[in-house]
Amino acid sequence: MTAAPGPNGTGATERHWLHEFGCRISEWVSDLAAHPYAQMGLVMFCVSWFAFSLDTNLLTAALSILAITLTQMVLNRQNEREADARRRDVAMHAKVDELIIAVRRAHNEMAGIEELPEEEIARLKEEQLHMIKGEESDAERQPPGQNRREESPR
Image 1 (tube, one colour):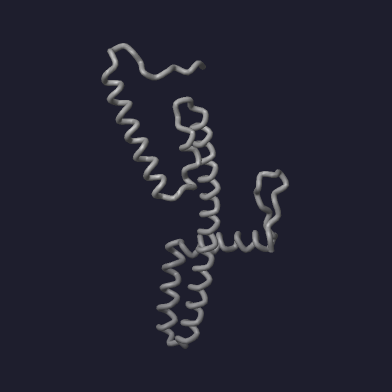
Image 2 (cartoon, rainbow, N blue to C red):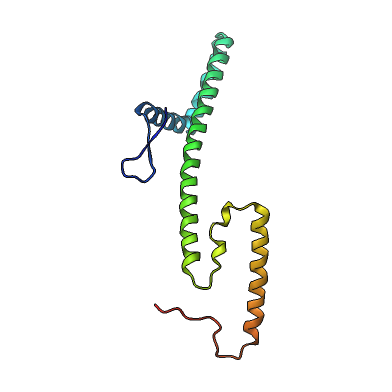
């Protein structure tokens, strides 16, 4: 099933109620299974299974199904967190790009470099370091009391 755009036009997506219900159950069960008391209870259950000499094939099957189910639940929660983190990263890059463009002395070509190949980003970083070293040596040559930076009106 495909997700529809949100009603407020923000690009948010609405999910089917069954998907939302499954996510809530996954969250609850994975939180419960991660609790130390639940883990100790499972170990005690397994030990008592062997103490009462019950069929180990049934225990093996139940534990295998439980392990696969819990793994999938944890992966589902991780995917939700990664999608949320990606959204925050994109928003942060947009904010930083806006600041770069708004600052007079900033180099506007630095806005949006996160989309470039890693080698190109490293090259731009080296260029910036050389420019910074050049500005530091220029500032050392200026007479005291003079500020090299232009003050922007506020």
